[in-house]
Length: 101
Image (cartoon, rainbow, N blue to C red; front, side):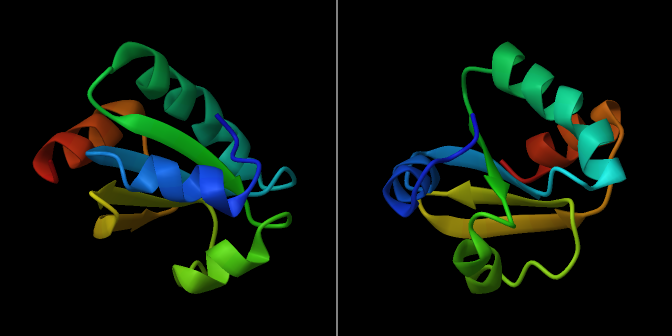
């Protein structure tokens, strides 16, 4: 689920619908959010899910204006649909995803 390079990132966000989690391994709220993101990735087949480590991919974080982590960005066909910053409980995250479909 964690992206390895820019090409993989582009392939994911250019799909119909994608959720990208910008995170860092040292970030407490990111660690709390990680199992929720994994659950969404495993339970929904209508959305691609990716994780971007901001320490490894500073250029991507900068490109999308990530100033705080975790930052979640929804993409539809390569375009940003919505952004959410900070920890989000799973029911609220699911609602946010569904509302921005």
